[in-house]
Image (tube, rainbow, N blue to C red; front, top):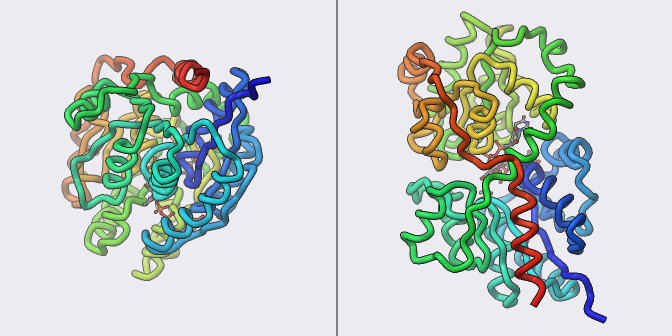
Length: 363
Ligand code: UD1
Ligand code: UDP
């Protein structure tokens, strides 16, 4: 008797847990067996376990426990640990998300072991080769058999690199999960009360991108801007551990003022509550830019470029870099556009992906 199709999914970092939640559920409903492998890239409970719990993601079948390290150490340990797992599981397909070192390790493993590879969030490009994520996504796309693109721009980016076979416009899983969970966040998250915040009367900021955390001038510029903004209204900063470490090294902690609320990373439900209640969001996160757009909250992106160019084109996102003067100017000058067209699908990306995977796996 033919066995049910088997996918081996590789996750490791916070945004990958969020994206995996709706697709894991949909794959199960479609009768596809999923073996979930957590590389252990993110391991603090606030960076990992909280997402599994809040989003009802099944316990990983395997945790490689790779942890932190240089890019070479981290990716190398992942490759060594993945090979025997894949050899034992013999999946019909390997599924990876996004652009982290866990994504690249999964892609290389699939290529070396000649297992078909599916890439969620394919075709994204910043065109900035100084970003580790840009290498990860380009290399992963070029190893992939199925490429799930969130936007038409992503499809075009792939086509420019000669990749058309296997590319599908699917929309974005982050919108699936946001739309499903936003009401629960509104009903249950204590974040506003805990932090003493009023809806629409605070700013939310996140910073973790290497180009910002590892450059003292850029990190200092962003923190100065946030401190200046906090003189007028509360600014909440759920801080990635990487950024906390770098700020501590520069003597920035504890917070310089009560209205600059530097806190630990928050769970997904609290994050959705903070995002949808903020007057404005300042971020260098990819996921948070999209979430701000879907909630209709103005976004200032603390980078020189973005992969999510549609949000900038629509007038809801402004690139402001890390210079305090430029950030302050962007906040002051922001005008809310009249319209907010759907850019990332209709919140049913998981169904489309599961459908394509089912067809691809049944031969
Ligand atoms: C990674 C991804 C980035 C993604 C981000 C999501 C790469 C190259 N980068 O960046 O694309 O946007 O995840 O959040 O894969 N740390 C902890 N506890 C943890 C995890 C990390 O303390 O649970 C600290 C460690 O000091 C570690 C540092 O954060 O060295 C960086 O972690 P790492 O996973 O290497 O990269 P991120 O900056 O999280
Ligand atoms: N997020 C969260 N708590 C936080 C910060 C972010 O739940 O304190 C969520 C956020 O809502 C989004 C995802 O984590 O769903 C984005 O992850 P991150 O910014 O780390 O990575 P990126 O999207 O830039 O790769």
